[in-house]
Amino acid sequence: MTKSEFLDQIKTAPVVAILRRPKVDLMTCVAVLVDAGIRFIEATIDSPDCLAFLESNAEKYDGALIGAGTVTTPELAGKAIAAGAKFLVTPNTNLEVIQMARAHGVLIFPGAMTPTEIFSAYQAGADAIKVFPAASLGSSYFKEIRSPFPQIPLMATGGITVANAGDFFAAGANAIGVGGTLALKDATPASIAACQAAARHLLAIANN
Image (cartoon, rainbow, N blue to C red; front, side, top):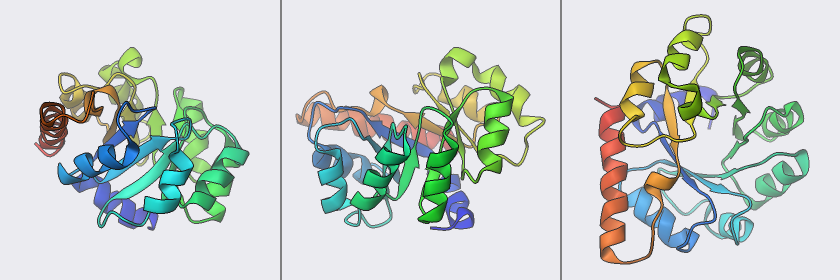
């Protein structure tokens, strides 16, 4: 997927679901989220069987991209890319990881907090910047950052919920990364229904 294609797709489904060491197997979690309309799903590389899941399923879900998160080093980036990750997400700005993603044609959303980190990561080739920790910084931070960097796609991640997602979109975030709110507590019908309801609510907020 090119940067232009990514920007088009993220406009219609600007919620990245983050699966960090989920209580339910990754295959079930992903199937539930895709069915609810989520199109970007990040399985953190420290989750059990993350790489094995990517190797078997990265191409499986039509219309959805499955990527790897918490990719902090070039070594982890190489493993994730080899396993078939369609995008990489990092909590930090590591220029070597960005360069590796670019070299392999994989989307990259590096983590950044300060204006210097945000700009440097984008200049290095990032497709979007994961501004982290978003809730600690506050939605007003995005409004301030948006002014000098109108062209940089920003993804608010860290503490994003149904209650505050709208504030971040209103302040200029192009997308949100959401973990706990979209986590399955178990595989019961009630838990699945709650997860899908939250996903649909977040998508509705994003497209309001």
